[in-house]
Amino acid sequence: MKYRLIFSLLVLTLVLSLIVSGGCAKEEKFASFTTGAWTGDWLTIYPIKILLEEELGYTTRIDETSVAMAWAAVGTGQADLWTNAWLPNQADLQAEFAETAISLGTIYGGGSHDPCLQFWAVPTSVSEQYGLTSIEQLDDPQFVEMFDTDGDGVGDLLGCDAAWKCAAINDEIIVAYGLEGTYEQKYGAESMITAAIVGSMKKDEPALFYFYTPHPFFIDYPIGEAVTILEDPKGGWGELATIIKVANHEWIEANPKAAELIRQVTMTQEDIAWSMVQVDDRGDDAATLEAIAREWMADHQTEVDAWVAVVK
Image (cartoon, rainbow, N blue to C red; front, side, top):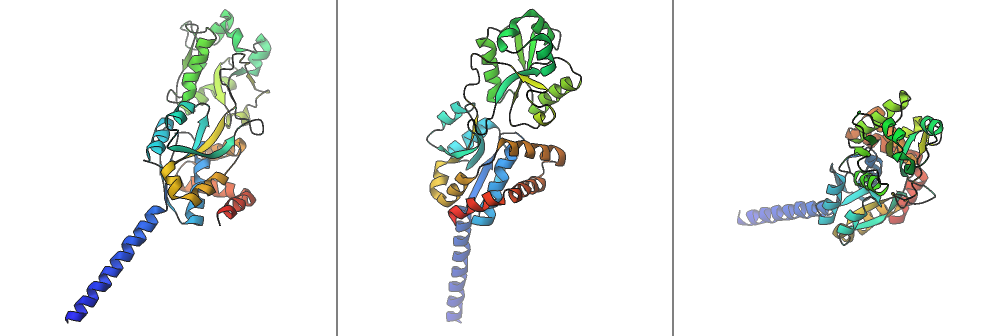
C-alpha cells in the first residue's frame, strides 16, 4: 500500500511537471499585436498572425489600440508587435522608444517603387476652373470664401483624426504658409472625414482636403482625373511614407525565428487598398478579417512560400 501511494505520487508529480513545462513552452511561443485604429491595419496583421500560428506553432492575441498606444505598448513590452507604423509621421514615437521598439523592416511603401503619398488636394474640376494648383495660392480671398464650408469666414481643410500625427502636420503646414486665422483644419474620424469628401465630390462642390495613399477612395476618384494634388513648395510632408513592422526588443531576442519570418513579409499599398475595400464591403469581425487575409495569401502563394522557407 505504501509503495503504491509513493508510485502514485511520483506519477502525479511527473504529470504535473509535464503540464507545467508544456504550458511554459506554449507561453513562450506567443505574440500579441497592436493596432492603430485604421482599416488598413488588418492586412498587415492577419497574414503574419496566420503564419506564426500555423507554421511556427504560436498562440496570438490582437489588442485594439491607437497609434500612440501601439508604440508605447511595444516599447514597454506590454505588447510584442506593431505592423503598420508610418514614417516619417511617427518619427517622434520611434525616437522615444528607439531602444526597445525595433524595426523588422518595411512592409510597404518606402520610396519611388511603391510611393505612399500625403497631400492637400482639391477636386480636379475646381483646379481647372480656377487655376488652383498650389498651397501658396490659398491665401487668395476667393479661395478662402470657396472653402468656407460652415460660413464663419475661415476656409476649412478637411483634415484627419486629431489623434493622428497628420493632424499636427496639417496645422504646421497652415502656419508655414501663413494661413493661420485664414484657414482651419476640421478634425474627425477617418470614416467621417472621408464621407464628407465623398459627399463634396458627388455633388461637384468645392472642397479642400488632406488625403493619403493607400486608400480605396482613389478607386472611384483617381488622382489626376478626379483629384488634383496641390503643390507643396515648402515640403510640409517631407519624405515619402515608409511603413514598417516594429517589435519589442526582448520579444525579438526570445523569438528569433518568428522575428526573421516577420522580416520577410512585404506587400504593396495596392494590397492595402484592396483589403480596405473588402473590409468595408464584408465587415471587420475576426472571421472575416482572417478570410480576407487567406484570400490575399492564396493570391500571393509564391511569396508566402518563400517567406516560410527562410525559417524552415
